[in-house]
Image (cartoon, rainbow, N blue to C red):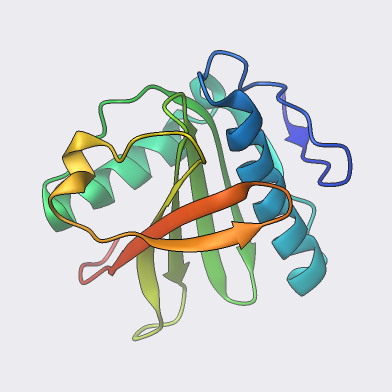
Length: 154
């Protein structure tokens, strides 16, 4: 069942099994606030078990582009279109959030972003491949993030 993310009253609903549930909920709320403010879009998520197509699409891109397999368990996922972009998010029990920004126009911007919740270690499968920049958030504390550009067609 879809859940609209409220960024004013941050809830750990759906993320309780994560050891950094509070920080991950803040990260999720931070994304919801961004999409509400920039695109007037209500950010909703589904349990990963109900969004296997989204999770599989994100995992396929990771595998085919960079031979990355995420070991953490996906908890929630979502996909939506805004401003000519297909966006997809997967939130993992480790505190990791992965988003795919995929322009629907040929030659448009396409990238995969990684965000690490405050209090989690950099996942082993990403540690040697990416440098993570820090960003402060009122909702999520310190977020560490990195990305790569998608070269293939998905």
